[in-house]
Amino acid sequence: MTPNIIDWKNSLDQKTANQSAFEKWLFVNLGKVLLAGKPGELVKMPVEAWGMKENEVEQAACTLTATWGLRMHVVHRCDCWVCVLVYHPATLQITLDRATANSRFGSLGYPPGTTCDTFLQELSQRWAATGVIPHEIGVALGYPLKDVLGYMGLVTLPVTMVKGWRIYGNPQPSLRIKAQHDRGLAAAMALVDADWTIFACSRTCATIPEDDMTGEQRCKAAI
Image 1 (cartoon, rainbow, N blue to C red):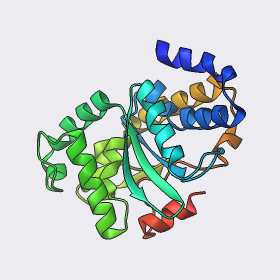
Image 2: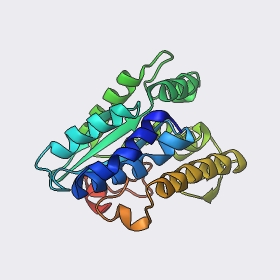
Image 3: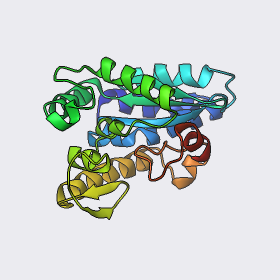
């Protein structure tokens, strides 16, 4: 655990109840990124909550995630919510380098050398144009490339199980990644003494949809 996270944890007692609640909520939502090496997390944030007015939640999240060494990119907006991709720059770039080296992933319009900024801007534009979460966002969320490509029908692999996402082909690599992510979430919850009720205000957006619900409908439904 990095010193900046420890310092942040120690500072919570000096903050207001609303501020502390917001920061704990955000930390737990990002536990898999901060503590388990996940490249990024798609988080749905209310425009107004925790005593903060319009856009203040987004601004506070941007400031706080930066102190944790993360970056935040808005990928979609609804009337009352904003969906942001919070990511670790170096980890996401490594993930993209590996994904874009695959010709099938490259056929989606992401050639080798695609940067984090280019990828995220393209995701935002595609989501805005279609109203549907681009399925390739899965690579930024740490899903194995085979599972992302399998979901998109770009590789011929059978669905072997569903464990947080649809797993294609050999399940073992996917299950190892999921177990690692789950440990990160559990560690984050333990650090701030949280239980599952911390997700009551908002939930992490669904990422690779299981149906034909539009991105905006899914954002509003994932409450």
